[in-house]
Image (cartoon, rainbow, N blue to C red; front, side, top):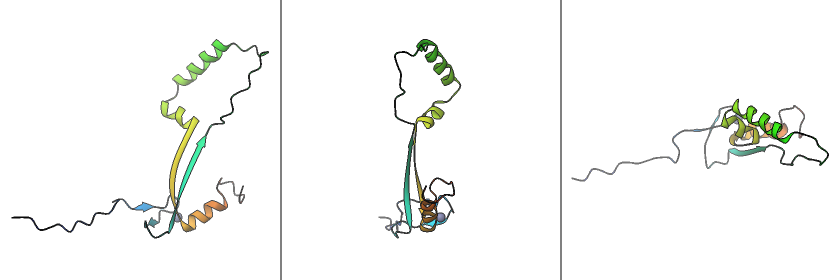
Length: 108
Ligand SMILES: [Zn+2]
């Protein structure tokens, strides 16, 4: 005998989407929240090296390697590049846009 068809009502994601600031439950498909993608990376400008520099390159490299030993791979990656996605409800999004750097100065 064939089992009766289950009323499969599986949502695309079981975990509710929450606003990263206030924790409000966000419903997908209602246009009531914003997806904010943040990408941060270290100054990509190569350091200026003049030929007059009398730095000891080997010593510099040794120092760098010594520094790296104290840190996890994850820490070093975070230092260079960081990308994250957050969800904000409309209210929090507006507040965030007013002060994206958290400095208290609007639009700066
Ligand atoms: Zn919110």
